Length: 379
Image (cartoon, rainbow, N blue to C red; front, top):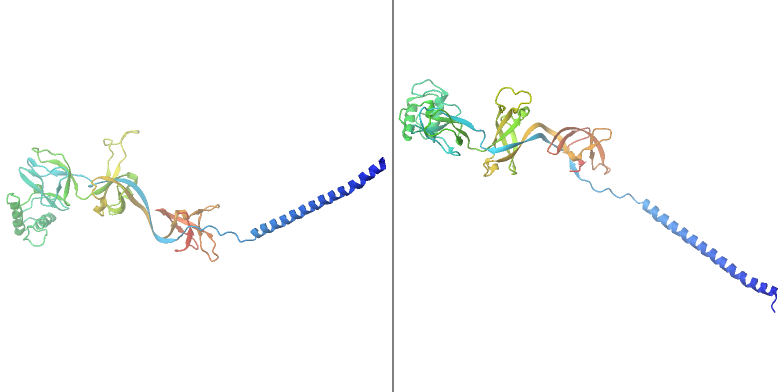
């Protein structure tokens, strides 16, 4: 029989070593894990330290542009219409019955008949001065004589020498030959109503007279033969339209071209004349501007079309400019540009004063600013 002591002895002797071995294994495993963890931390720390020690990545490239010295013009846009310029009334000055009239759109050149009175033509002469008296041999000298001689010569009827203000027998002889060519009475004299005097060839815009009517008052409206642009401006903008000034034109979406202002006239309001009461329906006066095309080919074959007109409102010559996209607003107020490409390859802000804005550019000035230096821009 087994005794209690033997049972306890066997159990105690066998259990103790096993517990001891399990304890050592657990401790050893724990130490190994700690060491492994420590090694992992060290490795990770070194990797992080190595990354932190590297040089920072280079900034992405930026778009730059040079500071440019140029002329700058500010402009204001207006809508215009392509046509044949302003219409002007042509009045009949030769007494009698109207027997011939031109068709609308007809182009009449020097020497050709504008209209007819009593079955006789009334031809066109070129000149800036209308005839204002009867012209006969031996009359007092005057500029109207020169107008007649210039036209006779241009039509092939000379013999009086250089065109001047003297109406001589040679002038009368040339006049008779011209009259004969038109089957007119060969009087060698001329009255103000015998011809129509216009600056150049004319185009008939409309006809108001009727055959069989009396030749008096307005017979028709005419224009020049070259296409022109007309613009209506508010009276306050009249200063934009100075005759002789150049403008930029874009005809019906075509290529930009240029024109020259030939006239600028104030048109009265259309409210019936006189002052309008408060709240009246009268329109404010407008300024009608006529612009000659510097190149007729710029309008192609168009007879009428919308036109964008750019009037110059201000000009600066020989100023430093940058694109508007190069401006930076400073927190303390004002503006600066960012100068690129310094000695150390970095960038720095340079405060600037602003001037005229035009065509996406702006006039700038400031200490250290000079032509050719590169500035950062977004456009």
